[in-house]
Image 1 (cartoon, rainbow, N blue to C red):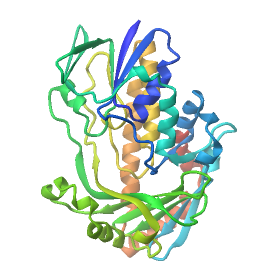
Image 2 (image 1 turned 90 degrees about the horizontal axis):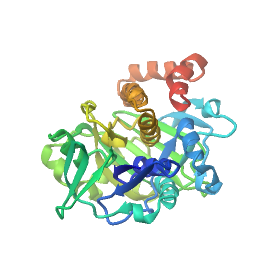
Image 3 (image 1 turned 60 degrees about the vertical axis):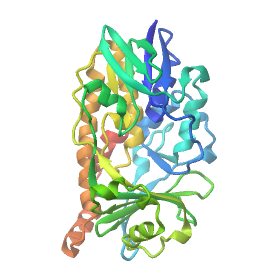
Amino acid sequence: MKKVAIIGGGISGLYFANLLNNQKDFEYKIFEKKDNFNFLEGYGIQLSVNSIKLLNSIGFKNVSASEVSFPSKVNFIQASNSKKICEIDLTQFNDPLNRYTTLKRSTLLKFLFQNVPQEKIKFNSNITKVENSNGITLTFGDNKNEEFDYLIVSDGIFSKTRSFIFNESIYPKYNLNVALRGKLKGDYGNDISIYMGSNSHHVVYPVNQNNEHNFVAIIKKKLSSDELKNYGLFKSEEFLNSLLSGLQNSQISLKNLSELKSFPVHVSSDFPSLNKKNVFLSGDALFTFPPSFAQGASQSIETANDILKSILNGTNEFYQERIRSISSINNKSKFNHFSFHLSNPINIFIRNKILKYLSKNKIFLENYLGKIYRA
């Protein structure tokens, strides 16, 4: 019986645990630093067809249809005048059993959590050391040790475990943007809408069938190192208002937003050196890209699936292929971010013309989206 340690109880960690439930030759334990899981946060995520297919194979298709939404298109809109430029049909990437899906992150976490025996989750875990010689030894804050055959690190963008493994501090970089996230009141339709502004963009989409919508904005913002450490800054109403004023959309204000949060956007510079035997990184602990392709949750799920295939096959082939895919998505995320934030009127005019053409070009859409959405 092989023992697996899963560090972090987010989407990637819990999904990997669900996969191991069907593997009789493995036993696992999840180590979570928090004292519980928060299933009340209402912010949304998008899941492309390939990740939905993986989730449906473990029963996600049985989640109530009222708790998810199936947008049929993405609308591209000029933020300054709310004029629609074009749209992309998402249904062309669906198959009869799996559809592009939007939902609350908490809905997915609850589904994954309910399938994990509670005795397999250790909350308030404080890992202080990781040794990887003959097997993997984890040392905890109470100086107790526990040994495992495999280690799955999925404790987020600021992963402490990752730094223990590589004996160095590995920090993401601030990419000069601030994210603004909240729940949007009002009827904003059943599809995804991307509002492109000057040095900012924001996205609105439904998270269920109850007319609840997720709102997320990415706004260019230079911040000093002291400001980045000032957590109170990101909660102040003055700061939130200053971010909203940069959206160039009079329909969005503090009046129709709730559960509003802001935070600096950090991204990975490169992949860690992946040369540790039986140690795998997943989710944001592996790589964090700009949030302009809505692939964070999907890639967490697909990476976890490829990790298991690599373990079962005794090779890193599937894992390495996923890393190549993530690199491609990172480049596309950067390009999306650049094109969504154009400020020069001439560049905006050219971009909009190109978008109108590409949104109907089947070959381009298959290469740019299809290979990722249903690889």
